Image (cartoon, rainbow, N blue to C red):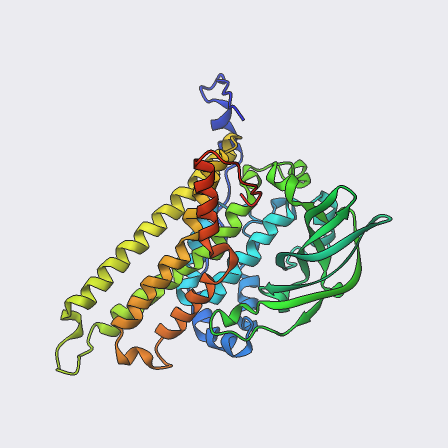
Length: 406
């Protein structure tokens, strides 16, 4: 939409005033004590195939899940750039914890787009309530009096074991065709299946879910189409510019950003590992040109990916603050930039693994675990960047591909 700026008596225009009147707060930052807890209990999460309760309790205590929650329910409506910086910092210690910080944290943003009554259902009773999701459109819903009857099975609900509510993708059967939506459902209506036995990201506890049949009130549904059009009902009560950032742009970043953080952790571990190590000929590994090349290139690529992340988040935040809708091609480019990240990190972490030598094979060393975590993230649908690249290419060629995940 076009933007018109009116100059005020104080010399500021409407856009500047909007930014100053709705400055997002800094989120609760992960403390050194919190990082120590993550470091101490991360492998327990691997063994449990869900986040260690000690880490979860520390995240709750420090308010880390409240970053994107509306202020009217005790949240922070935090600056997005700081939110993603925190996700990278946490993932550098343990990628599963960083993953859940982002994936469960962004669901507070999504709930803020639901009708006000749905938000009250969750947060009026417990402002610390946690959400998990599976946006797979595998649920089926029929219209009944007062709402919907929902049934289905969903996969990959990260943090499911600790969630109080779930956001679940489904299709509503209409005479004119199916409508893609997301339902808000309480834990009592959902069966959790312990299916998460994986090679990487074990601590995310991304379990399967099922509902045999449950009633969902009409106000606990959010349409994909209305979200795409910027007409989410929650915007009537959550007017901060933060909530005008397109949700899919955040969803793809909370899935890709942890890989950057984990790669940072892998690089730091490699530098420590090779600082005093000797090869089989008794020569310092730090003097090996191949090792030096790997460390230098990985460091530069991490800086590049972080710069692109920050620039994309700034572009999204500034457009939202100004009330400007980014073009669909701009959104496609921003999404593709984010979704390619995990693939790049995977390739770079493999180079780190090789540069760690035979000593890096030890189960006490972090390299294999980090590589498995980043590879697991690459498997996520949001990090399968090829279809996103094709969609962008088709658009640039003058076609109009159907795509509401922008």
